[in-house]
Length: 77
Image 1 (cartoon, rainbow, N blue to C red):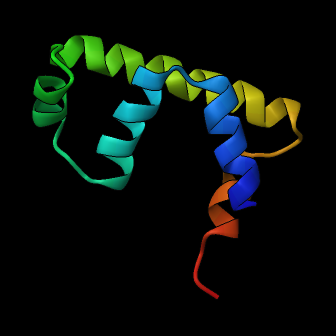
Image 2 (image 1 turned 90 degrees about the vertical axis):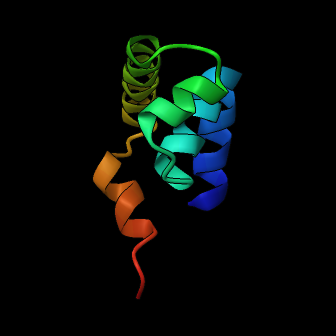
């Protein structure tokens, strides 16, 4: 599942969308700090994330995966 998720992220998202998701979703960097690092503003970053999430949701659907399927695969056993 990890390889599949990595492939989807690589194929579906732009480099900026991936960077934003990593900063905010994995590194837990606050929105204001992430916007500053990416040389943008909070509203533009929010829109970038919104678009990224929509693209991921659509792609997961095309691959017969739900967001819950992905989350479940990464839960501790």
